[in-house]
Length: 112
Ligand code: FES
Image 1 (cartoon, rainbow, N blue to C red):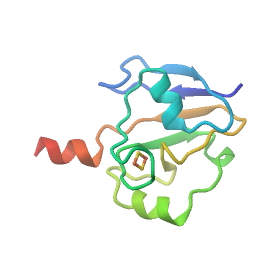
Image 2 (image 1 turned 30 degrees about the vertical axis):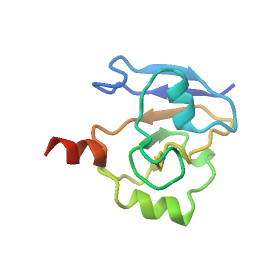
Image 3 (image 1 turned 30 degrees about the horizontal axis):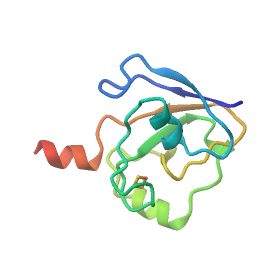
């Protein structure tokens, strides 16, 4: 079974975590199942950017993002070449190392 290694995130997962995943699950669902509360404001239909994650390792094992996802990601805080929407990034058969960005667009707007 592939694993998802989640890098430490101050609020959501201060010590980092190693999660068991199954091929076919989304990165977001695996995190949520393990009580890592990544936001998912649009309920996983690729219409927000709050589930943005950066795939530090294993990016190429994922199915490529489609145009809609790329359009949404363009609006994400802290976009990187290996950014994905967690609800659209489907685990394949390789381990992944995932970083949760410090902010989401929702949080940023709430704080200002
Ligand atoms: S939860 Fe909105 S795009 Fe993933």
